[in-house]
Image (tube, rainbow, N blue to C red; front, side, top):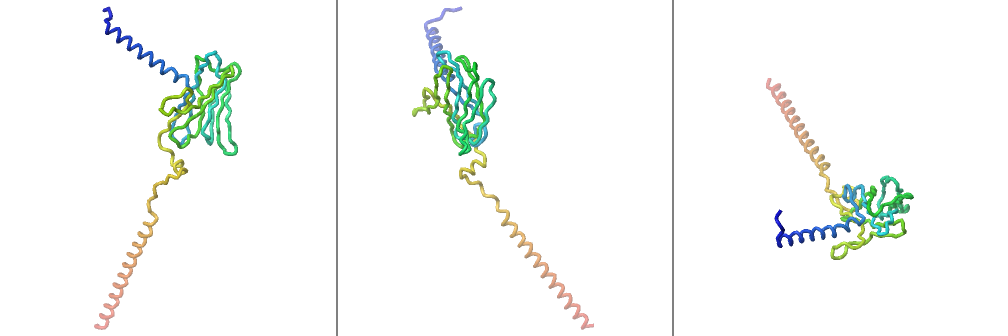
Length: 227
């Protein structure tokens, strides 16, 4: 094995520094509450998955999670062993404002773990949707993930889980928001014109038949007189 030269040593040190920087900058993303969707199309029903890591420095467990919803018309939560889910409904508006998962006694998410919480909702007709989230620990500490992106586009300390929607909303959703549907082909007006054409043709044929019959009668009378 050949000894490293000065240039080779500097190259290895630079590579290691870049790798370490990448790990340091990527690590905080794992500490954030994150949301994904199986069908992120505006106006459609989609299953949202919230990835929740434990990050307590004192060893406390995450025992409760509350996610604010954008006043969806309906919501259904997936069964999570060891946790109970409760929907916060606005009965007067007929919408669901939030969902809260609470751990059973002795259950929680440690600093070495993460958990997945899923809820099925109808997404709004928008480009992006934020889901402010409150994470509560067994020692009573609370972390609120509710900050919007900073003006320069960088990430704040406690960003709210955000979902980017893509695709075309269903026809019903576009109609509700005042988008006009393309006009239907004008087949109804074509039918009477076609009928009128047929009726005129029949009249001409009938008139021609009467003329021919009249000529035949006249010819027969003339022949009878001559004879």
